[in-house]
Length: 447
Image 1 (tube, one colour):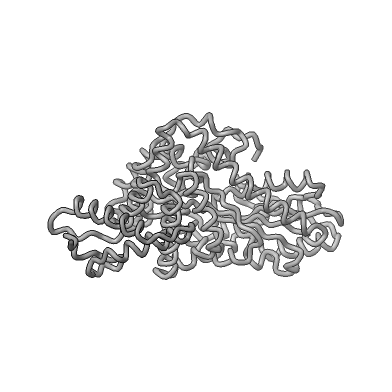
Image 2: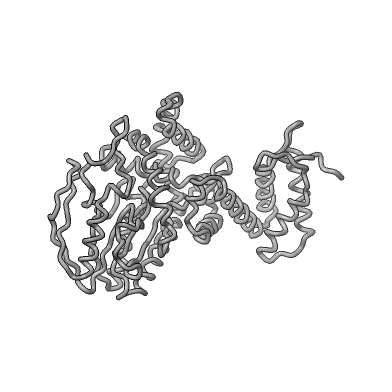
């Protein structure tokens, strides 16, 4: 019997004939990936998909390919084919990611994270029913928020442990460990945790705070609103950092400058520093992968660690949540709590943050020796409780302001995301040594 559905809308917007055989092929491909070989099962499942599609499609509506794929996932899960459903979800996500790589230069640039790492994170998310906002909400509704916290922290800690072991295996060769990543990716907490693990392994660590190498604030350019662009690597005295590292590795003493963030001024030659032959210099820096910072240090003497919020979760529209939006929310709550910044200031400044990341950080990700995922699925319900009202207000405030288009776009996107998330007011299940405590407060670490 012929299907009542005759056409389908592709992702490009093109309208093409509807062919149920394509659904059967997709289901069968997923089944083969997990060891299944019975095509007749795929055919029967396809009939269920088509039946639901016909029942849900109103006269005159041409279904979109994403609508069909959502129904396929639902049918597979409800029919008890969990492993096939997982394979189908992962394949679908992979295709979406590959399409994104081709869509625009900014998106192509942002995919410098090796796909193997992305796949590992997505695989974990599917296994823990945290790959969509809907699944996250369902787990929260079942009272599983503490479990989500525990599971998320465990996989992050495993990443840190892996990085520490890689460094330990290169003991004697590695003399500088660089912890790099974009704003609010969790570099500070990760650096502390990494340092603890390396110290427990008998490695001697000496921290170099490159924030002291900032040029005076008055030397940075300002926009028409008086906002300083201090997000670029050129805000740091890269030549002096490079010189000091070379001299330190040669056994010399250097004098580290001191930067006063209250006055925005730097004083040179303040703190003496020398490292011993068994010491490893530990650097936590936004621009740690930027070549000029360590240009004259041989690559084999460096271990470069990159951190990013690689959340693999789809919103209610079926789109992957943007990593930059997670970090924006983190920075808002941290800056408001610890630096006295209005969250609105963070939103208005974020275009500097993002443009600098795309130019100066992300293009160098492929030089990293290891990548840590610092995204924590449970941060979304926590941020919903803290920031929802702000984003609703900003989305309206900047709707008709041609000078704040970037702020409006971000405010609307995050507002729409948070609207779909179940809020969690009580953060007591989050332990004091969780990475998220770096941003929301209550950490057992001193920053």
